[in-house]
Length: 313
Ligand SMILES: [Zn+2]
Image (cartoon, rainbow, N blue to C red; front, side):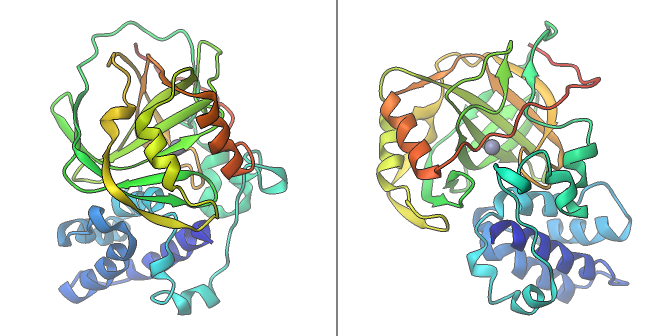
């Protein structure tokens, strides 16, 4: 249902785009929809205006929409708001298996066409990376993990405002992090048992994802806290008893690979900055097993062609 909502909300936004003029009232309408689930992303008037204006001018992917698509899984609270649209719209389901699996994503809906014809798709096999001067990643993370969601595609922890990643003079705020098993990106042809994605956005809505490979060994205590509270049923959401810090899930070394890519789930939107940490994080065999058990199936998109993209290290 979550991905259905994405499509439906999108349709609704397209209607908004027909506005001749962006008025405060119209902006407020868009904001109400966005605020519904985005919470900490909080659609400011400026962003909404940008969004509406972006559509009117046929600009590149509207930033708020991109945010919405990444964070909007589990739009339970938007159901009443969009009830009318739900009936009128058509729902496009996707999965990791079978006929709605990754090979078909690009053809399941016109909204997903980039999954099939994009040239900057994620994940990738990071091979032959070019040596480059890499600006340091500055993680200014605080305790902010506030709720854990099982959206049927992943386990996701939403993060309160105020934790940032600074790189090359740009600042991105951490919105949420989630997990894949096995890993989506590969390094020199090697996959890992799991991969974590920390999803950030800057003030303009540009996305930056920090990926951490996960290998098996010693148990990770932060993950234990999350796993202890993760909902077993898809659609389940649980407020965390204590705010957790994602710092406990970062590897010691902050060296990374850098390339441009996309969301790894439909609609596979491009323009995402990827930072893949070189050093993996260690968790226990049991922790990996527990995640796989709750997901019931793998949740990794296969690696995509790199085409002309430079991969930096
Ligand atoms: Zn991901």
